[in-house]
View 1 (cartoon, rainbow, N blue to C red):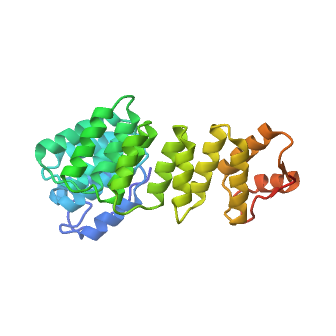
View 2: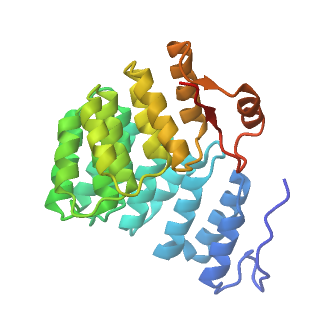
View 3: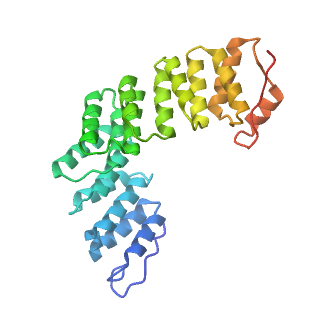
Length: 298
C-alpha cells in the first residue's frame, strides 16, 4: 500500500516542525486504512503533536469511525496513552464500543469516566444507552443512566431523552417510556415514533393509534410503524384502511409499509385487491418517485 502523502518537511520527520492543525486534520479525513493511521500517529508522536488535545481527539475519532480491522484496538491504544483526556474523547470511545458490539466495555468506560470526574454532555448518553439496550438484562444500568441524565440536567435535551425513551420502549417497558415522553418539554418526530412503536409492539394498539392521531407532523416512519403494528396485531382491515389514508395523503410508502400491506391483503383474501401491474413496476424500481397504489374494490 502506498504511503499517505504528508506535508513537505525540512527535518527528518515527515511533518514540518510546526505543522498546522488543519493540515493534520485534513490528512486524518483522507485515511481509510490502518497503515495510513499508523503513519500519521507515528509522526504525531515524533513531532509532539500527540500532546495537542485537539489533534489527539481527532486521531481518536477517525480511528473510531474507521471500519478497518484493528482500528478499534488502535483507538484503545491511543486513548490509554493520551495524557489529557476530554469529554470528546470519552464519548468517541463509548460510541465506538457500542457500535462494535462491545456493550459491557462501553459501560465500563462510562464507569471510568465517572471516576475521573470528566464532565458529561448531551452526546455522552445516547450511545451509552445503546450499549444498555444491547445487553440481555440491563434494567438497573438503564435506570442508573436515567438518574444521571436527570441529575446532570440533560432530561430536557431531546437527543438524550429520545435515546432513553427508545431503550425503555424497545425493552418492553413502555410505561417508563411514557413517563419520559410526558416530561419532555420538546418532542420531535423521533420522540413520537418511538413511543408509538413502543405501544404498538406491546400490543396496546388503541393507545398507539391515539398518539398517532395526536401527532401533528407525521412522516413515513409514523405511518409505517402504525400499519405494521396493526398487521402484527392481526388487525388487517385497520392496517389497509390506514394504508389507504396514507395514499390519500400522498405519502410515498416505503418497503416495510408495502410488505405489511401485502401481508394484510393475503390474510383478507377477497378484500381490497392490489393492482398487480403497478405493484410489480414499483417493486422492480423501488425508491423512485412513483407512488405505490392500491385499487380499492370494496
